[in-house]
Image 1 (cartoon, one colour):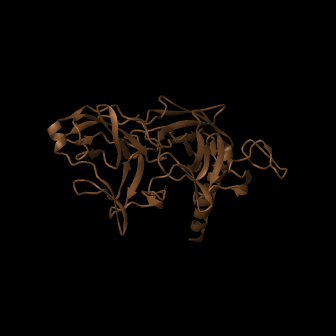
Image 2 (cartoon, rainbow, N blue to C red):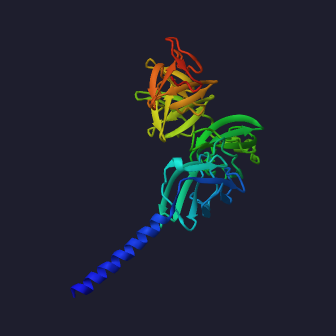
Image 3 (cartoon, rainbow, N blue to C red):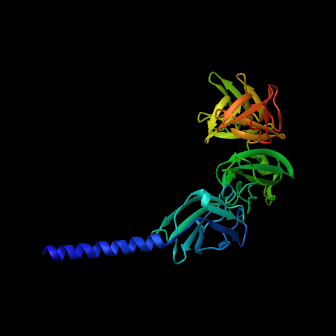
Length: 371
């Protein structure tokens, strides 16, 4: 029995030794060079096309499957970052031994290394890369039309809300906002005329407005119809604050409303709000008059910047050709600041010093970093 056991152990050891020797005999792949290309550049409103990868140089591996990890059944949306996986197979006698970023030389279409992993004892490597995020403006809303007095349009991918302009005889009457792909203008037709509207989306990605749609067809309002429409309302003040009364007895609540060219926000009780407001995940500043602020604003001895949609910006921002840094609270920074491991210097107006000597005698490069 002991002899049989010893023989079995000897056989197992020999087999393991042969396996280890065979694995050790494989040459490690120290460098991976891959070039990516696609048949159509990702663009908002387009479906993802075919993406390819090619092994470069004296490759000791071949490229297998290459595919997007994004949902290929959908259209590209503003703010999407295309992500691609390339599966590589080592040639006989070779194996992948490292997934460190330094191993990879990636080119084509501005592809950037994200991560990699090996499996099958190094016979296969899965490389994940990303491509530049889709930026720019939202495309125009399409198929806008009237259903009685309801303005209707196709929902736009990537839009979190919409801005709608109402025209009478091709002259602007009012601008409103909606989070749905429709808006009821009943009560807005106070004079006879040919009414049309245009609409644009507000991007979820960066809160910026997109392109305006084409004009809708006309909703023709007769004199009799206009006479039966309640006239415009007005501002009312009571013990709790200011609200806007429609002549039909209603009032705006939990919504934005443009009145005489300025945007106001009314809370769920219908009262106009002022000061800092967090709405739909964004910060806005409403002036003491209630009007939404845009551009630079000096609040409680700190400077803040609101974009044209009124959203408070944070982080690095290019504004009127100068670079600024707005901290998480939105407040503009000045002087020396340590950000993400580097030192930067900002002048009294908040603008970053670049490619120059700072007033206290330190050189900063073109990125504003003190070297």
